[in-house]
Length: 115
Length: 113
Figure 1: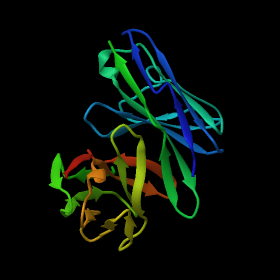
Figure 2: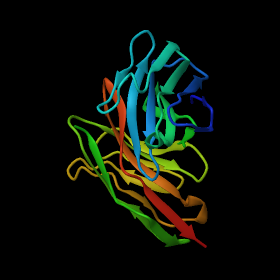
Figure 3: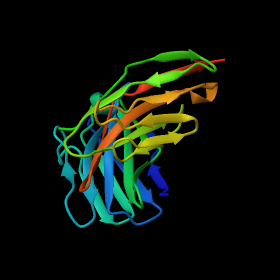
Figure 4: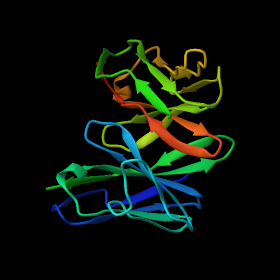
């Protein structure tokens, strides 16, 4: 199974600044996903990141606010730009492994607090 | 679009009680269904899954059966333990070329000794 390392694990940031979250996988994967989990709520998909192409964003999320990089098959970054307190959430990286059955693996998450 | 409706919590149980968390879904085609669990202070991890109708997923004493006729995937455990205290998420993926997960709201379960 894929092992995902996500950094930082938590951060407290000032409003108006940006934070870049890194996601490193121990194996090559085609598809990587970024989710947001707002306090007390479920996970919402932000975007799908495929290597060699631009990320695909879900409704309500835009590239200017959440730029994503995917330079190779084991790494991706998500930047939360021009942060406001409403961006305080847990951000999770996820990858899919296609063996006999499809399974998604998640990083430990980045707990972001914007003050 | 795809969506998951999950029984809202929080749910508080005594040890050895029976646990059921209801989950129903809306999807086109033949989705795969999942239950994920988030233990306190830990990341999200897959608990069980079912990829076609009438499949039963099971793990750690938990079971869920993929019911296409009722579009449901209810989670059950016959005798819960304190260590089962966690947040449980029902999720689906449309499968084939669409592997994005749609999650339910999550149900917080607390088991008391």
